[in-house]
Amino acid sequence: MNILWDFDGTLFNTYPAYTDILYEVLGSRVSKEEILSHLKISFTHAVKHFGIDEEQVQRILAKEQDLHPANTPPFPYVENILKFSDINVIMTHKPRKEVVYILDYYGWMKYFKEIVAGDDGYPKKPDPSSYIYLHNKYGVDLVIGDREIDIMPAKVIGIKTCLFQNNTPGADMYLTTYEDFFKNLIEV
Image 1: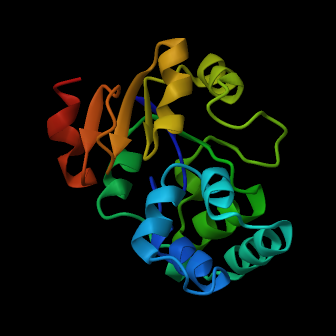
Image 2 (image 1 turned 180 degrees about the vertical axis):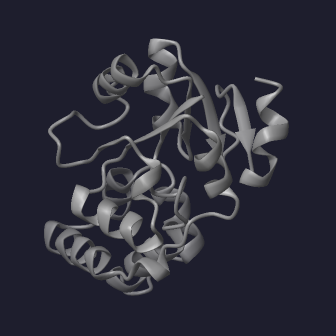
């Protein structure tokens, strides 16, 4: 099985740290729960929703780059799936340097054939261009993401989808924990 993965919120539990950063930058004027709900749609959505200006965006991005990988741990049991699959690839909006830093820290570069990162020139999700590229090269069987925009490109090109910790209608498979992956795989 060949799997295309999203990064933030799918492989690594980055949202608690990102929520804390936005909470700090916004001056505690919004609850962490509200911040998280908007981040789970997209960072761009959260920026627009909260009226975050360019200076604040730059502060947020700088704080994100300064995060130690220990503050963005992998989700439990996800490594079992990485070991099981034949090929794993990543498509993320995150800059390559940050992705590689986290993967190296956890010793996970060995699991990925290719990474399409935010600074590689592809249009942002839900545009399917990067998915088409990865699918044509690796024959992707399943796309796993935590947001609707992660599965939308896969649906356009006919690849099976899995939403992680998100029950938005439209996915072929839903997981709240990766421990249940193999049980649910039979159903897809």
